[in-house]
Image (tube, rainbow, N blue to C red; front, side, top):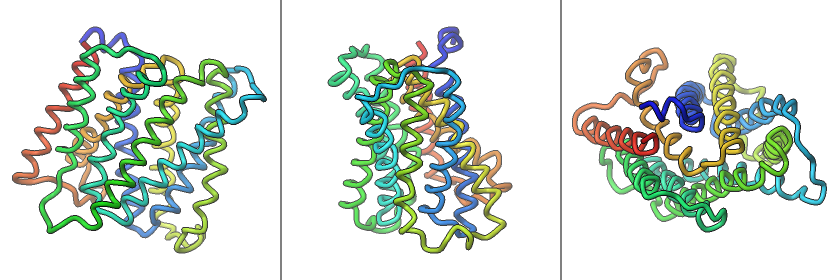
Length: 295
């Protein structure tokens, strides 16, 4: 794929997807040690905000009259995460994850409707394939009727929408401010807003098992680094729709890493039987979507 090798947005989105998958598996290990989703979100957001600070060296302009733009963008980041955790906490993950996958299509719609960008047919086709691939990759064995399916679909759909808006706002507004101003301000706002998660802690941070801290910090750092890479890619080159198609391969990377390191991470997610067939089908769709983007 010579074009793939010459496309920074595709390369960087693939790297971000891989780092996200690795970070998510490491954080899941901390969850098994009792950290909890809200304390995890708080720590991850603060580390993420700190990791964006070095971008200040890239420079840019501060537009005091447009102060609301980085604040709104940061709020979208936190709101998307909050809605995602609500969907996972109160609903069924096997329903929420495929619904979150519609973000790919939503970004394509929003960059067309709001940004005025005209996407080629292959990007629309790739977005559709990637969305279906996510649904198959996250298929779970049947275990009765999913819990509170209506609320799960509603909150996961809202999370996908808010995250899609976040990506599009970065693409539209970052060029005027400059990467070195817009992104640190936006994620800095997100870090400050994350203190609203503290009342949801089931116990203070000091109560976290010391065995969990290396997993929590390590996973949060990887997720923070991939956030810097992915969001900066959209801010620098635009192409939010294309980047999201490639970035959706994180589901495929997760399965590969579970295969390779599931024992080391004490993962219980190894697939077998009919479930493996569905995941292989999802992987094929994901690879087809990335190939379309890179064509």
